[in-house]
Length: 162
Image (cartoon, rainbow, N blue to C red; front, side, top):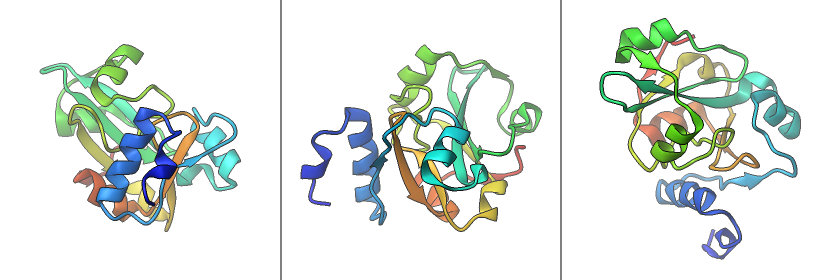
């Protein structure tokens, strides 16, 4: 990637692409023809199992208003009680909070390259797969990763949160 190919992309996708490039990640964001706001939409567009979609779920920690990001497999549901046991009481994160803290709109939240650092947890269920796909800053943008890449790019611990 020389950088010229980043030019037509939105600022948020460019931020993700820079983070990937800076970390020597072998894959750049890909733009899909259709939006992939849900794990099922992304899986259908990519022709992969829904579990291979690394979905980013944002919560708001009540004690300090910090964003809590849980990255989990698209076929699993986050268990808020398990997350709270690790990070403290959680509240709902509305669209404005998600955009202000991550810099991404719901449906395109990347697991990394947030505007404000988030408390991040990676669910161990993602490690069932050799390859996963995550949002890359826009509802049409995705990036190919290995679960270990998520650990490396986020610095987050792996936990049982589903």
